[in-house]
Length: 497
Image: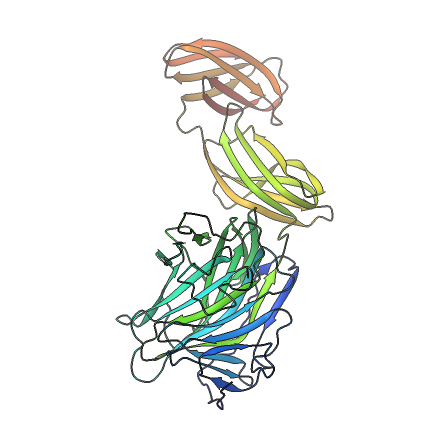
């Protein structure tokens, strides 16, 4: 192994690790460079943490490696004092820093690291100099993460590539544009998925966070944005990317998106015979890499500062939802959800809002306790407001701990239905209704708990109608009148005095 003494690296900012993580991580894997040997390697070859005389420190589990391709003039420099690993990216082939066979890995993982892309000297790097972050499963002995092959070809990625994000240098604008790997065949990869969120500027320290979900259910995590901790849900088979400019006056995390969608889908792999080579669902994420390529002239350098941290969790929340849906029905708005597993789940509380901000409880559904089975739940909102109704689902443990689960639903009710108004006067309820066609219409009166207390059927003529309903049998209080005509359904509240 050829080694050189390390030259000092300046302009580096102390690392700030993620305050956001999956709830109660089952395990954490952290790897830094303080235990390494100060050295620079520039000879083509592979350098492992398991070498007889390694310059890379041994991780708590798995293997860490750097790889230099031939004829590339690439180098890796480690500084244990500064806790950094710097690489001058390859001019041909791909230079790679990777870790694989990480113990206690699960199908749900977040990774955090701090990186800086530097210009070496006065000459700008070559256009399209590229760095790629990837994670997945170390499938066998000759895989993407444990050999010298690049993310750009999927011949070596069979069944083990989950995420791939490219930082592509634009010489004209002097910045790095982000994209994600969409599809690939055995001959080439495709990074056509352009990400919105802002380009990265050279000579600037960025914190990268990727929340990845290769499970069969949507997963939720908490992330600190400014002074507010907010929950975000990653759809199954997807991941979220956050980037924070640590050199900004006020470092603010930015969540990157693809055409308005924050859930970036995992990379899809296909073979020459159209065989699906994608990483299987629920396969653990036990490997990652950072590679550099196309650095003609070797004018670009990337520096990892501080530790790389992976958080794992098999069950992110007490409840793993596979779906949460709702639709208008003759009864009101039907809400349905399905859980794949539950832990100490006492009950669900259904919350509704008219403005998407202020929520109130409208009902409770008993939970399934602790189980690893599929459970289906249903709740009917019999008194939705006309217009948009927003719904959230709260899960409450036996100890009172509560968590919002699933996404927020926005469901429109009644806006396209016929006119329906009521007016109460003593024992008489006056009904005013306009319908689109002649036919039998049912009128139902319920209390606020949804119990039917009176009902009547009328044949209404097309157009405007008015008639009275005797409500002398009702006690004083607030009631809900409902009009049902074919697939139409509309409500109006009134007070019986």
